[in-house]
Image 1 (cartoon, helix red, strand yellow):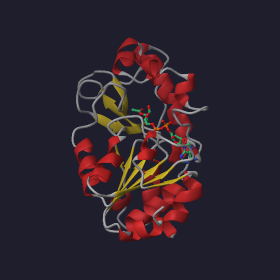
Image 2 (cartoon, helix red, strand yellow):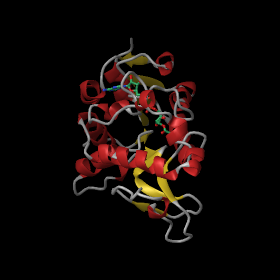
Image 3 (spheres, helix red, strand yellow):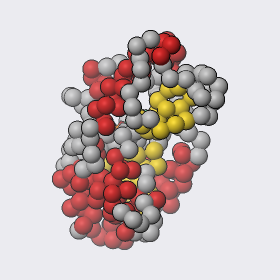
Length: 251
Ligand code: OAD
C-alpha cells in the first residue's frame, strides 16, 4: 500500500468527492445501508419529477421533514478538516452529492474573516435549503418549512406563479448545466481524488474518481464499507469520516 501522506503531499490538484456518509456523524441519515432513508421510503414516490406532479404536497412534506432534521445538524470534524485543507492549499475543489450545506457552513466557519470561496463546495445535487420554480429559473433561499395544509397553500413562484419545488436534483433529472462540466474538469486535472462516505452507485458522481484514475491521478477512499469505488482506489481506508479525515489531512 502506498503511503497516504506521501500521496497527499505530492498532489498539486486535489478533488474531494463526498457523499451522505460524511454527514452521518453529524446526524444526517444516509440513503442506503441498514438505516438508510431508501430502506424506509420509496424514492419514486418522493424524489422524482413525476412524484411532484402527482402529489406535490407529499413531496413537500418529505422535504419539510428532511429540512427540519438537517437544520438541527452541524458540521463535524471531517467537514471542518476539509474546509481548512481547501483554504490552506491552492488547488482543492470539494465536490459534494449532499444537499445539507454542511460543507458551506464549515467553509464559512473556517474562513472567519477571510474569503471562504476556496472551501465552498460544488453541489452536484443542489441544496435542501433553496426552493426553485418548477417552470422558470427563479430560486430563493428557504430554511423554513413549507405550508402543506392544502394544494393552495404550497409556495408559488414570484415571477410566473408556478409551484416552487426544492432545489435538489431528483432521480431521472440532469444536473444543473455547468456543474457537471466543472466537476469533471477538476477530476481530469486532479493528481488526487479523495472519496469520502459515498456508496458510489449514483452517476454521474460515481465516475469522478475513475476519471481522476484514468488520467493518472491517485484515489484514496474513506468508507467503513467496501464500495464499487474500492476497486478504483489506490488506497482504501476502512473507517469513518470523523475518525479518518482529520488524521489523514494532518499527516
Ligand atoms: P449513500 O447513502 O448511498 O451511501 C453512504 C455511504 O456512506 C455508504 O457507502 C456508507 O458505507 C458510508 N458511510 C456511512 N457512515 C459513514 C461514516 N461515518 N463515515 C464515512 N462513510 C460512511 O449516500 P450517497 O453515496 O451520498 O441522490 O448517495 C448518492 C446519492 O443517492 C445521494 O446524493 C442522493 C441519493 O439518492 C439524490 O438525492 C439525487
